[in-house]
Length: 403
Ligand SMILES: O=C(O)CCC(=O)C(=O)O
Ligand SMILES: [Fe+2]
Image 1 (cartoon, helix red, strand yellow):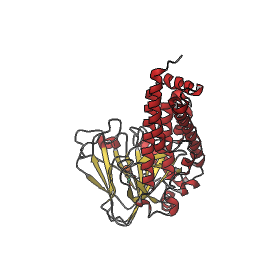
Image 2 (cartoon, protein in one colour; image 1 turned 60 degrees about the vertical axis):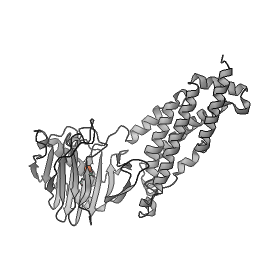
Image 3 (cartoon, helix red, strand yellow; image 1 turned 180 degrees about the horizontal axis):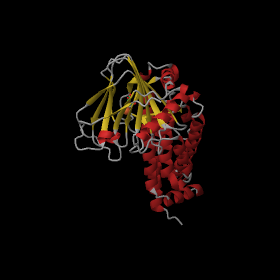
Image 4 (tube, protein in one colour; image 1 turned 45 degrees about the vertical axis):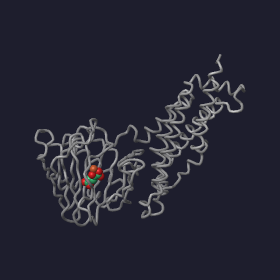
């Protein structure tokens, strides 16, 4: 095994820190898994269409091409886009193990990597192939290991201090002075250990030719893995008294998972390991929508309309009163307004011209097909009906006593 020269790097921009000097390590060359190089060349890279400033804002196409590989059920959300991991190719799985061992030898506390965002950079007309950032969506204090293959000249990695750029105390701090690490030709690796990523940003400055980087990370499980979301969906009780939790859950499933899946096109449906997960999420989403429909119907019935004095309306009014009276209408209206606004913003995102340059099977499926199964009526009309029903409900409750 070729050990590789290890460069212990001092951080010129972090004067106070004695520990951070050893939290960024370069190992060059890194040739423990020679087959990784060819494997990187064969991956199906594509640019990503991200939405860095949040739903309802401008889309951005990444300068680099990427693909996410990882453990079954791993996802990685960055710049408003959730990537769903394809299985590790065996060479990269071997590389992952080698990087993990090396990270451990360097003293990393948490380096059970779950995914790698693999980047391909070439023909970079911009100075920055990857702009300044700290990696998001990772387990706190976890190590990031990057294997890179450079076939060209002039590539550099930028590092600068930025206190709490990420991590538990995340806030937008002022970055320090940048330091540039020249990258050698061939295969090498660098490691951002422990909380280095919390307090530093990195960037890739483009050179000539091609550069590949496989960035191994410990992606956050809570909120971001298939097992988490399936467990979460299962844990939500389908009962009227639980309407708040149901509407939160339907929001998570629809906007954080299903829309994120369909926006990446039909090609995703070739991912054998994801299809059963998506099917289960769609089934759970439908159950939650049905509960929302039950709430909606109960609220309309309790508002009575022409049947205000019917037995059924009285029963529903008792139900609504037991759940909080007029406030339940407000909650339902608020939920539907939020759902409608997010659906509008997602449809706008899906139809953005940023997707025009993509291959047809990587353009958004819009609207996503599962929406056609929603039992809810048009939301704008539903909101108007709820408002009217609320008035009617309040009018009847002032003249009716419940027994
Ligand atoms: O290519 C690299 O070395 C880093 C890329 C990067 O920062 C990322 O994928 O988050
Ligand atoms: Fe990064």
